[in-house]
Amino acid sequence: MFLAVLSIILSFVLVIVGVLAFGVSGGDLPLLALAIPILWLIPQGGVATWVLLIGLSLFGFTLQYQPMPLSISVWTLFPLLMVIFSHRKSIHLIVFIAAVVIAMQAGIMALQYEEKLGGSAWATLAQIVCVTLVWIAARSWKPVNRNAWWPLVLVIPLWIGGLQHAALVALSITGLIVCLQSVGRSKYRNWLPMLSWLLPVIGFSTLIISPKFEVPNSIMVSWLMILLIGWITDFMMQVDEEPVD
Image 1 (cartoon, rainbow, N blue to C red):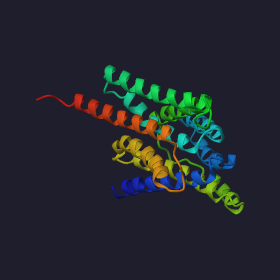
Image 2 (image 1 turned 90 degrees about the vertical axis):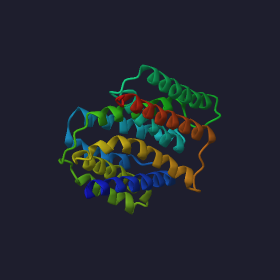
Image 3 (image 1 turned 30 degrees about the horizontal axis):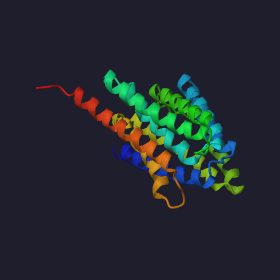
């Protein structure tokens, strides 16, 4: 249990460090920073790995076109996908949550189209697709121990070149995957759904709390609405699943 708890605590810390480092970069990360965790994953092979790589690569490409808070807030959709495609089927709740999510995201893209919010509507749509791809990969992911550690050496030129924030982002992503795989291999793997809620919340909350960053009200409201609807829907599904005496 100690190792699982330690992995969870480290995952929280890594998300905070990664978000702060990403914030310092202003969303402008060198390709090498995202290539490091990708190269680290490739030796695993398997369809899930390649789906994950495509999702992360495409997401990295969109970062330069999007406001940083929006790029981080979109990860709240990850646990919602778990709720929508959960075995606890409730067509009414699923339609409800899907309608709210579509309305919120459409509102964000409309603001971008009208140039009332930074970024590109197409980039927002692409990031939603990226999160969906990562969710698909995570759903069929099988933790393995065959990761190649040599790509982490590439952090050194980033650090020496004065791109410490990029090095921290690369290490945070890689370390987060290690922690989640550790929990997935343990008998406490049923904690992973809880982490899928907490990690995106911690990431976006880091931006809100930090005085260094400004989160537009439209992004904050959209994120909060999607999060609350997701939590309420998940709770109602759990209540419906409980046996009646």
